Image 1 (cartoon, rainbow, N blue to C red):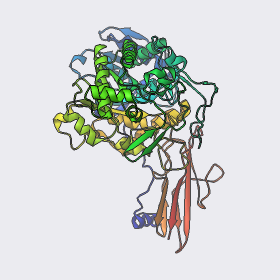
Image 2: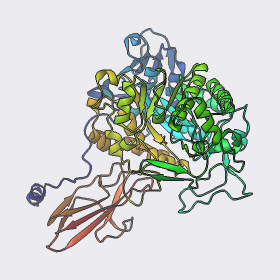
Image 3: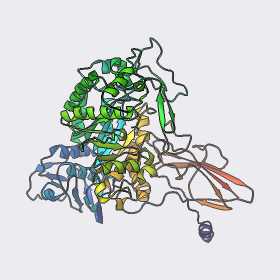
Image 4: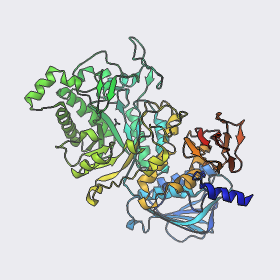
Length: 627
Ligand code: ACM
């Protein structure tokens, strides 16, 4: 029998063997720069003494809170540098940390002693790595592997963008996402605070932005028809952050070494602001309503047309007075050096039809409405600079006259990025086409929930390489880092948010942090991910469950087939059918490699589903075998 199976493997050379066995190693995500495993373990218990001399008591408390909440350990902490007598000790020290690069740390675990050398953000990241060495299974003690880690990031900017306009997420939901980002060493939260579907930040000088602009009529986001707001219909869906909420979130993020980039998207994407202050547009339509998700544009190859005006009037000084006040309040709330001004997808059709705009353009020798947006952008840049901040915006802000302090958030990929760095503009790479738009579907299965754009499977998000071939060494200096975007047109709930973000956010983290030469999709997906997904499964997060096969639909030809499957999430079960039916718990449970023999002119249709210990399900895979 053994010979028969071996022969089958040799004969078929079947590539699809599911997920490989776990290899020895640590499952830290993002993978550290340098890891050397050693023999033995450190037994962490309540008796482990924590000795620290670092100034950053917040990070030390972060760790002791972790111990208390997860392990119920109340470890004794001593402050100081002297040698201590203890058979089990964790030393957290900044001695020797002066020589370490920003955000880096050294962690060594030996049988009786753990030493973490770091300061500031590096200390925080060292603690995150240490926490990841703890097992998922809570017991009286925690057995940690002996290992030495020297770690530092590949990029200084490792970001995630959340669109809170298309759907609102509360302050505590935002904090939860920040917690998760911090665990994976992401350090920039780009907060897309305004758009056509809601203005989410309290601006004291313009109160209607939130009393009117943050509320819309309720609609189901993925209905095949979304009705526009009806006359007299109550706007009950939405919400906003007060300035107190924002201050609290900024501090919460800072405690986790995350900086927040606020985005006020202008001059397009402004329908919510115009519902509050229609006089800021050229059409001044007092019937403007916050968009409810209903379509108001037509997209075609190379362009789009908008049926409703959602743009600010770039020729009106009142608009610049408005923006001056708005960015003044924004700058007071957010200490980060950059403020994002959007700039994307600005429809010029209403400007083109407006006599006042035409007269302005003539008078100022502005030949095209494209150049009129450039004029607008440079005015906004002046405002941002006057608040002692630097401007960042989407690709569309590219402008011959941009001063070198401005930065571009590139979503269109290499060609545009090259033009941007050649102009010596700092850029952040957030290319939707490379898997970094997390509103895209994670597989081609029709079991995926509704999504906004294309396809961005985990492997695609993981394999994105920001070191573009066309970049010279000098060009690379301008690429500050990477970011993934979560646009929320089709994300109305926290549950769906996490489904879309996990596990792709972990792939993002590894691209942002891990040295290119240490990136390895197989290690990530087959070894490291299982521990992290098990943790999410236990903690009650919704997440995308990797299916039993890496594809969702394929056809194989042959007479003999062998499938060896291993679910990524430990303890999951795989159920299957061989007759094209949708599989579930009442069907066959996969227990051992499946060996199938098929006579000529026959076919099998193997369908599989993975069900995790918490009951979360993968999409169904379909494998057609024909002979
Ligand atoms: C964008 O995708 N409109 C920034």
